[in-house]
Length: 147
Image (cartoon, rainbow, N blue to C red; front, top):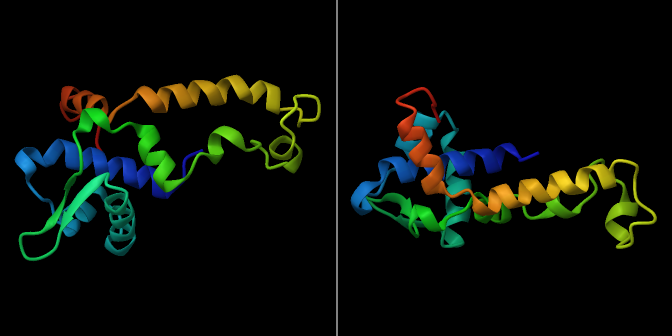
């Protein structure tokens, strides 16, 4: 459902929430190594998030990335919207044009009406789940959950 790029973005933002205490900048090589994400690919993801004010970035020897706003104010939906867009919640699950082009419920694919409530539940989950909540649960798991 979510692209790998989006999953990496969520993991990276969560990593910064867990490890970037007191406005500490974390270098891209450290994040890449810890999360097993190729550095060039991660760089593009983090720059996209920084461009959208989700992250703050500083160049130079003591540079790196940190959260651009408090973790309690960053929802998973914020990240999904930046990286993948909102198509997950509006486009046809199986890719038929009829569902997207027709705002009426009379001409839609057979799965559309079944997926609609699930799509709404996902939207509500991603809208309410924050990076703070996610990072708190990871910290509470005492190493059982790894990024």
